[in-house]
Length: 362
Image (cartoon, rainbow, N blue to C red; front, side):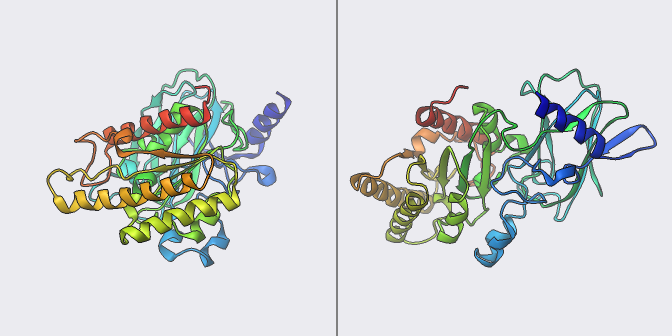
């Protein structure tokens, strides 16, 4: 309790940026005293809204590095009794994509302490502004999910002058221990959720109550040893590897990559549970033979690798099949990227698997 009060008082005293003309007091999570980590959902203590440390730039491919600048899966948690909350921030890239709206690419998403979404007015200017008004008293901390496919330059949260306010530190603030660390593709990255709260990793965060770390790299979840080194460097309750949609190589090469990836995880984290996921299946696999043969090819290779690893006695290794994912026929925006409907199916399948593997209380 004393520690919590200390954070509340220090955040209120030193996190205030300014009082606006209309009585708004602004708070910046990167401008708090002591250099603490107030950015949730990542495995590295960085002083910005990115997902890999600076040292990674020299070790991973440029495409992975550039995508790691996106704030996918990151979130803030804070307490306040203010009836009005305003979020202002700037991003470096375009606000939207042809198949994904600005609210998902560049928006934020606020949930109250009871897990209920708060709807706010928004404006995609410079800065982007979300305004939430008439909020009732909140039980617990608010969670603010950050943009999925953009890089946040700066961000501040405004509340009414005189209201209490405190950012919660990332260490243990979720009321949970080690996170679920997820390495994957654009589907993990968040394409094509309509808003950040609907990315399946963020839904999983709410379903399980466990912190999640999103290391999805759009088009670039390719089981590369350099990337796995960083994934496995994060102490985790569970590692999820969901890379089959980005396996653009021959079947035997996929088989070898999966073998090597699991063996690498086991060298670095001998006991931590590891879950391999199949390709969810292309949306047009029943109407396009090429697509069907492609997703069957990579799954066949991964199943072979899984069987070989189990034969070798690899422990705490688990598998999630396409059938268990259960992607609805109309659950995708295009041929591969889930809509919110598909994201929910993905998250529920993973939550069920997490329940079997970790038996968490949720």
